[in-house]
Image (cartoon, rainbow, N blue to C red; front, side):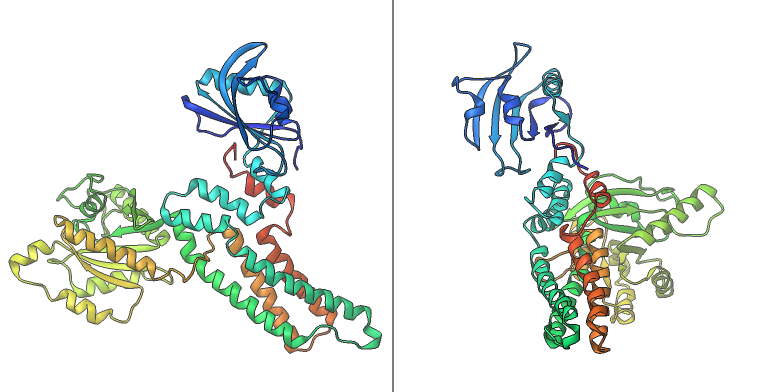
Length: 466
C-alpha cells in the first residue's frame, strides 16, 4: 500500500505566512534537494552530516527562487526512518507553489494524508497506537486531551500490554510443543501459571476498558446540555458561563427555538455547552421542533444541567424531570436559578428537600445560582468539573481511542474463553485456538497484527504533511 519513492508535502498551514515548511522523505530526498540548493558555505549538501542545518539559495531552472534553511536527517535517525529533508522558506503563496512544482518535476510524489507517520510505523519508529496519538496530539484542544495524547505517544499502556502478550505467546509456544509430543503425554505448559497470567491480563484489560469513558470525553470534549422550562434562565446561564452575550435573552417564553452551542475549558477539560429550547407542550410547530431537538441533545449529552426557577418550581416537577432524563452513565446537575429574588422573599426550603430526596445518587449534584452573581457561576463551574472527576481514573493510563476499546473488549472475551477452557480441562489444541485469538486482538492495538484496510482507514484521517 506504500509507494517507496520520495514524497513531499507542506507541513505548515495553508495560505501565505512569514515562513513555510516543506518536508521530503525517501532514499534520494537529500540528493534531490542538493541538486537545486547552493549553500552559503559552498559545501555540497549531499556530503553533510545528519541533523545539520544549512543556509543557502534554492534555485529553479537556474534562477534563484528563495533564500532557505535546509535541515537534513539521515536514515534511520529521522521521523520516518528514511532520509528526510525539511525546507524552511518565506511564506509567499508563489514561492510555496514553485517549491512544490520544482520537486514534483524531479520525481517527488505528493504525500497522502498521514503518509509520513505511516512510513514511521512501517519502519518501526513507533507502534500503531503511538502513530494514532500523533494525530490526536495535533487536534488536541485542551490540556487534558494533550496529556492523554502525549502519554500514548510515549508508549502509554502498549508497552505493558506487549509484555503480558509476550508471556501469553510463550505459553502458546509451550502448548504447541505439547501437541508435538502428544503421544508421550508430556505437559510443558504449567496450567496454574497460565491461570495467574490470565488473571493479570484480565485485570489490566478491565482497568483500560474502565478508563475509556473518561478518555472519550477528554478527547472529544464533554457535551453538556442545559435544559429546563421556558424562562428558567438557560440562555442567561450560557451567557454567564461564557462571559459573553452568546444567546438571545428575553422574558418572552419560547425565545430559543434552536440549540446554541459553544465551548469552554475548565481546569484543562473542554466542555461543549448546548443551550436548548424550553421544555413544554406547544402548538407552535417551530418551537415544538426546537423542543424535539432539545431532547435529542439530552440523549447525546454526558452531563445535563437541569435549570429551574427557585421561585416557581415544585419538587414534583424536578423529580419528573430527573426520572425522564436519568440513564446509565449520565451525570445530572440540578441547578436552582434566580436566588437573588429569593433573598427578598426569604430562603426557599426546596434545596433542602432536594438534598434529602437525592442524597444517595452519586451521579447527581446540586447547585444554587444567580446569573447576575459571578461568584455563584464560578461555584457552578467547580461543581461541573467535580462531576467529571467522578468518572476519572487513577494513574496516567487512559484509553481514548474507540479502535483500541473494541480490540480490548474482544481481548477480554477471548481471555475469559481461555480461563473457562482451563477450568473445563480442555485439550491443548482447543486452548491454543482461544490463546491465538487473544494474541491477535491484543496485537491489533500496537499494530503487531494488522492489515492494509485498517492502516488505510487510520492514516486517511491524518492531515497532509504528517
